[in-house]
Image (cartoon, rainbow, N blue to C red; front, side):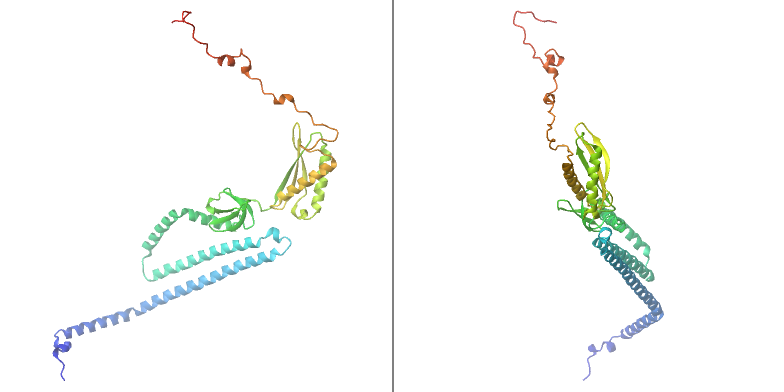
Length: 361
């Protein structure tokens, strides 16, 4: 059965040879274009693949090296923790948090630098002009940095605090805006526990000064107030006996890092005198040493008959009677009716009666 002419466009349409010719030319041009540029495309693709592979391998190597370094730091901290001075010199939790924070920052910085450099190299391989992109990125970075300057300040302050080891977990610090024991150190916020149990969240950028009470050593200071009639040599002897006994007993022999010293007479008043006692102690233990010293000095003074200020008088001795004039107020100028103050406060006399003398101008 013959096909209708309407169903045979190639045979009936006079423009069909022209269309086939144009299609053939387009295919030929595309083939020739691909044949001419396939080597360039292959070279660009291989360059991009090589850049990506090298960047990924370099990033993996750097991150593994940093992780190995952090694990070695934590292992050394755990090894020292079991020794006699481990509890004094090394805090494993503090070292762990510090090393993990530093490792996180270093890994992030390394990844950003490696991947950012690889991305720029890929764009350069694709013949893309990087000048407008870098200019736009610079403007965007300035805008973001200006808008989030507090966040950037907190982050940079936290990085330097951790790297310089200004404080760590377990330290008792005075940060100005708050004080207490450090329970967590972050890149943006430091968490403190106050003396009453409250938790303070302090932004690192707000910390202008830090007083670390747990580094090095501390000083225990005790003021002994005694009667001015007591013998100073006797007081020194009794206090020194107390100090020698304290330094030989546990746990005070570990908390004392130096001998207890009687510094001497610090203040002399009419009814009392003050003898100052000092001792170098383990960080954070000065308050317990001070309380123990006061307790033992008080017991030793009672046994030796040395009277302290505010104590009971000695047997057969009465306290001096209070000065009766101490309760008398100072004389007032108004008590003298002839004084200028009394005259100034005198009432104004009433006006003269009618018919009496009058004062005229």
